[in-house]
Length: 395
Image 1 (cartoon, rainbow, N blue to C red):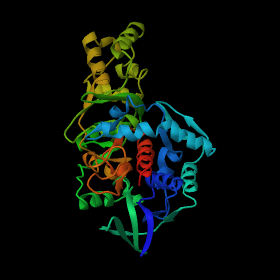
Image 2: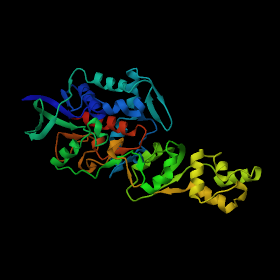
Image 3: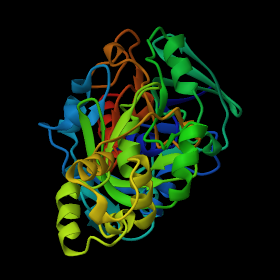
Image 4: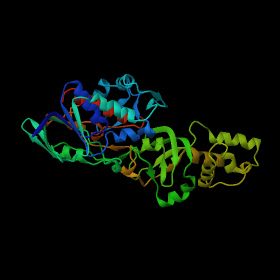
C-alpha cells in the first residue's frame, strides 16, 4: 500500500494552505479532491478578485465576528496566524492588493494568483491528486487508511478540509460531516449562510417592482445590525447587509430595515413642504430615495396626494415606514448561492490550538467544515488560513 506522512482531504483554501505549511516542515503530503481544479471557491470569490482577508480582524473583536457554539474557539488559531501574516505572504509572492471598505482586502488582479501562490508553496513535497474520489477512511494501527478511486493510501495523519455544503454546483458535499460522525465527533445543525433571503408570494407582489433597486441600509435582527448595501431582487432581498444578517436570521423571524440610515426623513420632508408643498408626496420622497422605493414607502404607509396636504403625523408615519420597515422572509436561496455553511464539526470535540479531534489522535478538521463561520468580507478565508496553519504545525 502506498504511504505518506499526511493526507489532506480537500483542495480548497484550507487544504492547499495546510499542504504548503506541512511542506515547510518537511512532511510528505498528498492532497485529494474529486474536483477537476483546485481552489475553485478562491477563484470565484470577491467577483474574481478574492477577498482574501480582513485587516480589521483583531483578537479583541474576533469572537463577535464569528458564529459558533463557542465563538471564542477560533481565537487561538486566529491570534497565532493573523491577517498581517497572510498579507506578508501575498507581498512576498508579489501579488498586488487593495483595501475596499470595512477592512476588506482584494487582489488587484485575478484571484487565480492566490491559488498559484498556494500551489507554489506545495512544491516539492506535496502531491495534488484531482478527480480523485474519496471512499472509506479507517483507523489502521497508529495511522489511517484512505480508500480512493486510485487505490488505498496510508498516512500517520488525516486533515479534513472538505468545506461545507455551499455552492453544490462546484462539487460541495457533506463528506467531512460524515467522517466526523463516523469517528464519534458531534456535528452541529448546518444551514446556508451569507445568502439572499426570499419572500412569500404576497410580499413579492408588493416588492417586485423594486427588483434591481439598491440602497445603503441598516438591516437588523434582534440586537445585531449591519450597515451596508441592500438590493431588492425578484425573489426577495440580497446585497451585503442581507447576506450578513442571514447568518443570524431564522425561519419565522422578521428583520427590520432602515432604508435611509443617518437621515431624518420626517424633518427633511417637513422642510420641503415649506418650500414647495405642491409636489406629490412620493415625488418629494423620491428626492431622498430611489423613485421606486419612494413610491413603495408611500403606498405602504397608506398615503397619497400633495406634500402640502400631509400633516406632521402623516410625515412621521411615512418616516417610520422608511426607517423601521419590518419584513418576514420565508426562506433563503439555500446552498445554491450561499457563500458558506453555518455550523459543522463541533468545536467541543476539537483542540483549539491544533484543530485535532480530542478523541482521535492524528485526525484534524480545518476551515469551513468546522462550526466556525465568519462575517462577510474576508473573515472566512482568514479562518481557513489560520486553522490550516494551526493544524499544520503539528500534523
